[in-house]
Image (cartoon, rainbow, N blue to C red; front, side, top):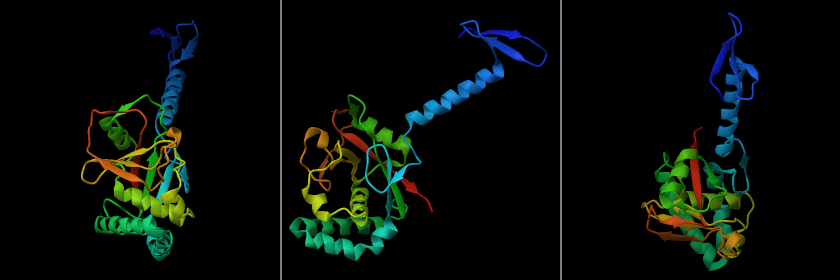
Length: 223
């Protein structure tokens, strides 16, 4: 665009574009602002779409009040699912205790976001930065256990969470409470047979390149 301004009248300032068109400067600025707004909305994940089913690219809501009211039902369903279900319930109990002791970190309403994987690779630090950019940071193991309990409240079967291969495309990267890195569920795109409740732990290596995993973000919702 050429910066050629032509004063057509005492009230109106026009600009001549590189293709010869003449526009009011006011209209040009308005079009540019609209372009920036549209670009910004495309670059950021939607903060409006909230789902009750976990999906890439959409916010998923965890309501701890619903979980607390359904605690006995969750316990019963886990115990009915055999040894692995009982182990999962013990995991839930530990995470719920941590959440109850840290209400500022884990308020009644939390929303989580799985990034749609559309890059070649990201470093560990880049993935953590992505989560900071869209919310309050990267999910930890407590939020993952709250997510699983919310999914049980939403009708998913404990058996599916501990036995069936996860339907989500990518393994999710989380930030453990001790600062390390965790890997949670996912993996359908790689024909991974790990179930949704699968959680493994590792140290944090900020510069290691990750090609297949995707970051898992959260934000607190204040009532």
